[in-house]
Image (cartoon, rainbow over all chains, first blue to last red):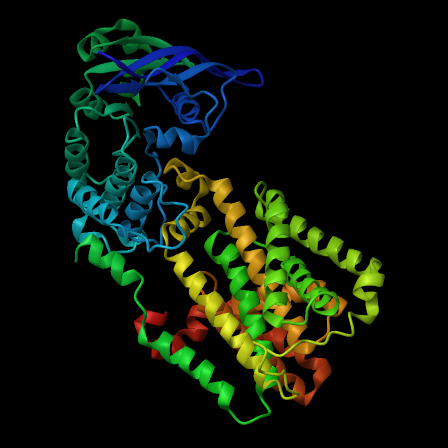
Length: 250
Length: 321
């Protein structure tokens, strides 16, 4: 198995607070990996370090073997490291069509093109159609994003990331806040992601984690506590103590 | 409807747009008497369009946009006086000078909050204003730049006293630059600007190089403002320090806000309303016109443009809203 994404000794300190503590982690090509941990474990900081929103205090991030630690967020996206957001970060008054065409066009290096019409070149419009169909958005392409049902917005959140052609996809609580009726669509969309895309799922919802992940890492106090297969994680007494026990009460 | 069709539909011309431009051009042939104010409207419209490119599309707020307007005016004026009287050449010089200074100063507006940007843009305009004041051997300082003899347009059409040629010139340049802006905002580049205005974090998470796009659009808007300034200098054959004054930055922001940001026609509509209000209100009691303008703004802000203009816009077809 080749490694799609890797961190080596990744650390982030905010003053005296260690938010990420020497995390060495590998995500294999085509992985279905979940990252769990109690609130405040440092999951968000870890994502921000991976995507380049925050610079690390120490350590490296490697994408397909290449050091990307010093790359800007958008450069990482163009190399195939893409994330979704726990809270929708969509363009409220644009339509899904415009949002997806933007993402696809940008990937094709058209973002500097100020002369042709958005989607004027054939592959863009066709790819937008494909992505929209894959995520069940084909019939709402021309609806303003902020008027879509919440479940559709969550799907769009994933679809936009998918439109960036990720090699590694970081899904930050994709089903958070979605009503039960629409939840199935999200789970199906995630399950149907292409097998060659490495997916790292950051999630609180244990049902989703155990139905999706083939490997699980547990983050506690900024450091990796343990990593293993779901059954092993579920049985691990340390994990039960710090995490599963906590959710059982909470 | 499939994505290719929908995307194509986005860029299509709507009939109200066509009617608007036909009327704007037909006004060239209108009886004399109104061309001077029409010329002012066209210039303010271009200036507001320029501000809309950064504020309405990229979300960069500026309180010093007159910096580029004034630069364009002085560049065109000095070029006319010392190099060549041809207006189109002078216009090009105004555009290039403002665009270059826009490119340089864009680095100052990349970072920081809206408040920082307000201060920085205001500061740049103040600095330029004082420079123009101090360099009076070239700019004429407080007396203004005099002695411009603008040549005939295309070597044929002289600028007349009633402003007919001036309006024809300004409205044509406005139209050409509007076409370009319309093209730009509907391009992938324009789409990335719209994404940046709404959510820079997400835009960069889609692979959009936010800083580079902001530099590009800021320089572009500066060049547009320079064109507006050059038009004013050439059509009035005079440049005063007023072109760089704070009032001008504030007026253009007001005009744009009256017309609505982020739809290109906002600047034009706002300029029309602003100048007509100014004309009507100040014909009664010139010194009080700002009172009514202020009142209008307060009502606009409190009632909301949507409700106030809702009646007007409701009459328009969906295409122009």
